[in-house]
Image 1: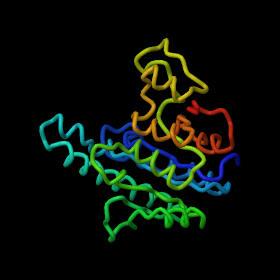
Image 2 (image 1 turned 90 degrees about the vertical axis):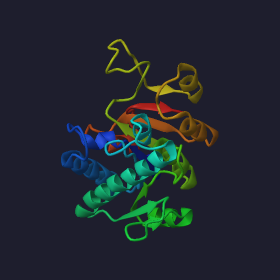
Image 3 (image 1 turned 120 degrees about the vertical axis):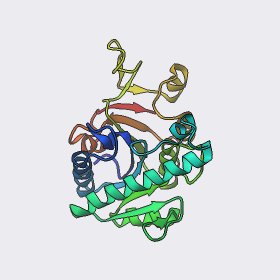
Length: 235
């Protein structure tokens, strides 16, 4: 395997599958199976999941439901629901896990402590980071970038429903071209929607590569960890 320790970022929307809302069990089972292949190959895996399939803070604000900080805290709780669902799917197929949250909720998860997280990884456990950074106004992209630096991961893997980074949205523009590799500077210049700018800046400053790939294609996660040219690398 090319990498020893990786952080996988999954969007909440990816868990919906063909559904309009919530968690598609088929997607959850596939993701768990793909993670197991990587863990069985000896790679230490940490995971951050978004909560957009359940609630987004900005949507609550736009709808007049809550103010921004309150909406973001609601979104953080949604990420914990997704994290618990993935934890259950992983443990059902024999993978040992630990769920660590940025907001204290001792009945269901450990509080995030950097050294404890690293120790869990060293013992071969999949570590799932819930509740984002624990602060409003920061996305789970930023949480993934921050946690990857804190645990000294080799890279951030952003699993999406597209097979890399394109010059435009491939679902809207059929002429969009895919990049095999792109620099952080070019991401800024082109205004590409890879991750939010806070996350991109944090990765750039800490020389943390990002690989964007199609997580819905079975086996892609393992192929990326083996060093195959899957998706787009930002470095």
